[in-house]
Structure formats: structure tokens, C-alpha cells
Image (cartoon, rainbow, N blue to C red; front, top):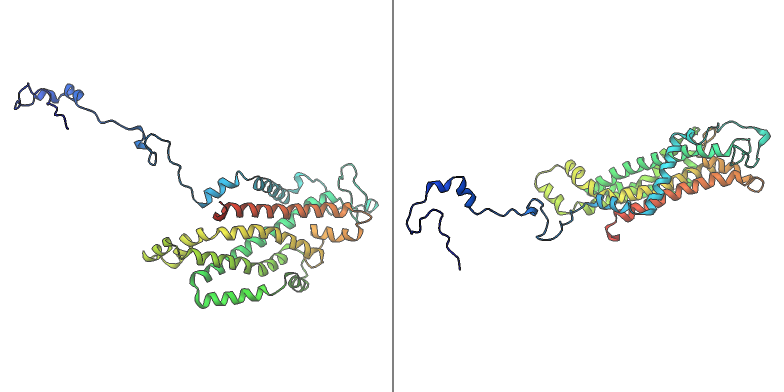
Length: 334
């Protein structure tokens, strides 16, 4: 039942005129005011409760998980340290990796030379530090090249399909059938340069098919989503649809595979250098030092221990980083 409220200044009668003075400031004070709710300015907040959490996307959720993952933190710190000494090895090593003193050949640790000397009397500590440059350069450049080439070819094959997909799939199958070590022995044995770029080119040549298949499968899955169909219906071109809508949502599996493959490529470079077809002297490489120390493992084990340990830690750090990124980007593991 609604209660009637008599207007102010009505004079007690039913049909009296409203006093114009009631519309002045005093009349405004007497009017009922609308109650302002403090939470009306906060969309998403429930009445009488806390604010609703703001939705996060895949990348923000992944970063939120990575920051709390000790495996990611430890591996990222190790990789950051390796990248720093690869760029500026003088930060922790002041010696010359090419200077040798034959009088100290195969000597053990000494003051100022904690890792001892190699067969030519060179400081093992200095060569171990400088060896990070070649390995990190090969790993990063080969991973970037294989990821870019494989993502581009695989993405186009998955998006357009048809004869383009069939052609690229058959080409990838041909490269998959080549054993990587045998291919390295054949391809790099005819290369006279001992720099990192022939090794990088060989790894990219045989590494792109794996990433291409991952990119193709991811694009095939993403292009069937409703937002991609809506973009096509609105008249978006194939290039815009592929770059703006499909690629950002299909790149996560490629990043995971590329991160894990980076450690594998570093190990592959060391293996090829150990076999004598990868990097060649005077380039400083962990694989070269391991190869020269293998014959002296009984007489001077320190020559093999330190470069091999540095290689193992580097490969393990990148594999741990890839596992952490995979766990953060895989929605099935949430």
C-alpha cells in the first residue's frame, strides 16, 4: 500500500496552488535526495561483497604462473648470466683465451687459474667463459631462424590448405628423413669456414620442419574458432585475419617448442664441433675444448670437466625454461 505525501506549501486543502517560494533553495532542501551507492562506480562489484576479479588473458595468466615457478626463476637467472658473459666475457675473465704457455701444459689449478691449463698451456677458465659466446650465438640464431621460417611456412600451409599444404608437408617429410648428425657430417665437411654461420644455416635447414608442423597444427585449430569466422564475415583480408587474429593465438606452442629446441641446438653444435665438422679453431667453443681434452681424460681430467660441465648446465637451463613455459601456456595443465 502506497502512502500519499502532501506537497509542501499546499495549505491543508486538497486543491490549493503550490507556493512559488517552495521552489527556492529552502524548497530544494526539503526535497528527497537520491541515495548514491559507493560501488556504482566499480563495475563488476557485487552488492555488499568484494570486487569481482578482473579476467586475464593467456599471456597474463602465463606470466602470473611463471613468476611463482622456482624452476623458471632459476633457469632464467642462469640463462641471463650466460647471455651476459657471452656478450661481455671480460666481466669475469680478464685473460686471453688464445695465449698459451707450453711450460704449464696440463697443469692443474693454480692461483689466478682455478680451472688449470690445457694441452697448449692456455687457461681453461678463460676458455670456458669465452666458449659461452659461440654456443649461445649458435643456439639463439638457429632457434630464431628455424622458428621464423617454420612458423611462416607452417602457418601459411595450415591457413590456406589445399595444394600448398600438401606441397609443404611433403617437403618437410623429405627433411625429416635426413639424420641430423649424418646430414651435418655431409653438409659441414665441405665448408672451410670455421665461424658460427655455416652451423647456424645447417641447423635452420634441418630444424624448421619440426616447428612448421607445430605451427600448422596450431593454425588449423585456431582458424575454426568463432572470432576468426566473424572476422572473415566482416570482410577482413586473409593477411589481416592471419596476422591479427590467428597468429597471436597460435604462437604459444611454437614458443614452447622453440625454447626447448634452443638447448638441443646448443648440444648439437657442441657435438658437431667435437666431431671436427662444426666450429673450428681459432674459434673458442666448448665442443672444441672437449674434443681436445677427450684423449687426456686420465692425465688431466680438469680439461674435460669444466667445459663439459658448462655445456651441461647451459643445455639443462634452457630445457628447464622450456618445461616451465610449456606448463604455463598449456591450459590443460591448469
